[in-house]
Length: 275
Image (tube, rainbow, N blue to C red; front, side, top):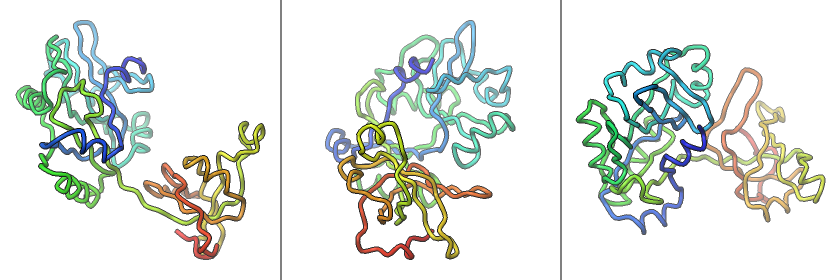
């Protein structure tokens, strides 16, 4: 099922320069919900929601999730974001412990009663969704500057970013752009993870990192993403600048969500590496 969903859905790109050079206004801008991408499918024989990782949600197991979609006719496919609470970790928890909190945020329609709608423009598809009672929230921007202003508004409201879409057919390649908020932090490299690649080649892939919290050196997980050439230069004890999306605080641990190495900081003393 995951291969089918991945092949079916449109995937956003992250290259802003490419997107804005390739596509002209209007741009359809949607706030980015933090959850998992999923499609709603209703056929004559079955109704379900499937994500990209082979998980299947059914009406018998998640009745409240399907209630807002119960009026849809057979042979209909809706694209959306499955979410719960504020972040994907709430979703992972609630789909087991509190199933009634799950909801599908619909933002596109691929098929309606057997008719393939993917060759219509996005605004045409949005109009069809509203006609069948699926309200979608979006803003139309006429420039990149307007898009970035909407992005800043989304971050201020607590969203992780926006998805910017060209008014194009669903099948148009590279027609969706994801813009997400990021922060940076300076951290201390406390060790090199002994991955199979490192043991075989001596080239580091992943590093354990730490910062000072209340004067105490505190581990905050690992970072493995970043420029391979830069990673070859990093040694234990170095200070590196890391980009991340958010700080995750549990009862007895701190970690970074989606960390990525940006550069080595030769000008930064270890004691300045703090949350």
